[in-house]
Image 1 (cartoon, rainbow, N blue to C red):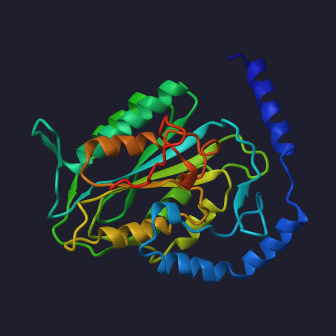
Image 2: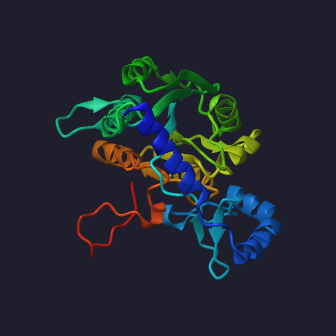
Image 3: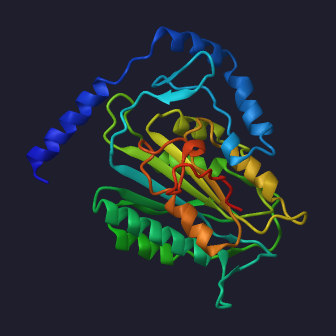
Length: 316
């Protein structure tokens, strides 16, 4: 693409952004009501999300660039569905719990959860880059029992990202950790991530968290404000893939998932869960390929070819 074509495309994007629908008076009234209950809803989202399903994620208060109807408070983005370049941070949990179940294939071969996650991430990056070569940029982070670490800066060079990905090693726990502080993760993201401009964004920022612990509940001891800063920007998104043990009374999969679901404070996140099923792991990772400005809400997404087929959104 020539410089002239690039400039023309930027001008078109700017014109469409300026022509976006403004917030009407009905929204202003609804927003005032939402702002009054903002604190109470956040507390409810953090503390009362147990048992909440993927399709039952609650809508929270809108930002200044979204509109809502008074009748049912359905959130509608007021941003053009443009294919802006993405800056994607892939966060990979490296912890291997003491009692873990490997992924097992029909051939009898078994692989550790981290190995399978790395393969799914590699396929995601290569597929995304094949769809639009050189457009999107990727950064890499890891989580272990001690904290969050930045591994690779934003780059569109796929080989660089994959090389850093291959260097990630397991962190084997000596003692089980019943909770994990997400504050460190989002503080690191806040310090290193690129923030899109809210009035005339030239790119979209997205965090894809792949969490793999079934006996350690992710919570915020500190740093919740960094999550709020991320999600309040209408061009920043948070997606989560929870890769867990087969759910049983011996683990805390349901409690972990409830806390993960509570991270979606805008209703624009995609949150998936998968047990030790290799095919579904790759399927769910593939569902994250769609551009966050151009995909429907998760509850409205359909992955079937039959128009009248009813799809159940469960990923266990």
